[in-house]
Image 1 (spheres, rainbow, N blue to C red):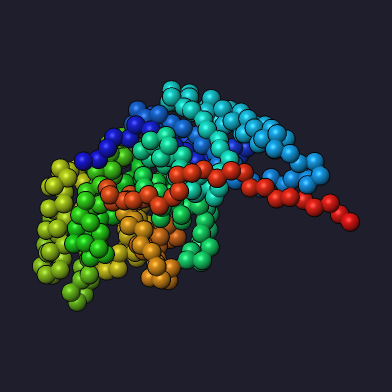
Image 2 (cartoon, rainbow, N blue to C red):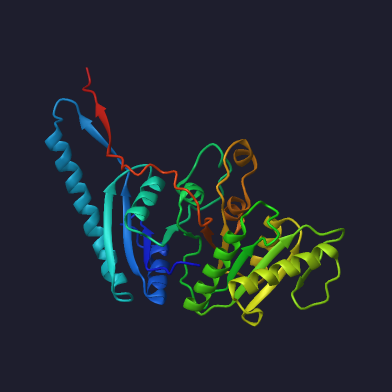
Length: 323
């Protein structure tokens, strides 16, 4: 059973920016879902301290003043958001790294959905150098919407990427969560819903819509699995466009997203670890690098949080006097 989305956290990287796609889309979702919205900024800048004049009270005052400044900036953004959705709060905390700060805040405030702007460009060393969006995809227990397109939603096309055959080792409950959340977004934003299942074809690749003549054995099995999933979740086939994709999931899902075109793709992530993850990544990370549409990442229901709950304090660097 999918928990309703009652509280949304929008991570604001730069409160002084003139364009804030994550905030705009989080506001849309809060309005459509009747949810509360929180604007959060993680203050992870380094504080440079003069060794001759530093003392605890001065540092605390400096941190407090900086936090107050960020809260005022967030309040200005919140005032605009309240024109569309009534309950908007703000929060700013000294904490680092930013992705852990976002996870900690999401857990503290009982957030049901995190919305964050995706870093532009491709990340070619995700196993060695992690950006905030990569780490949120890997670590955040609650669903994360990674915003890649700036324009607001208008009856967006939602694609649920599922794997009823569990070829990649996903638990069945994760597919159910993906499909339920996709249906929730589709209903709230009044956009068409698609479900896509990529399978390994036997021989030549087969691609088709459910209801067309499919005789290839693996395709038949994939069709039955997808129909069974739809029935368990309670999403009628007449309400959802179902796609069978014969081939590698990453390439097939990307091509489908381009053909439709998709506005949001909903996919699961189990956050594998170790050398295999560092070298090849998983489907969700591949989609983050290659999709042009927004990506909504869902974790399994029993996903365990691995982020320390204790907040980090401001990072301080002592500046030694010259000479």
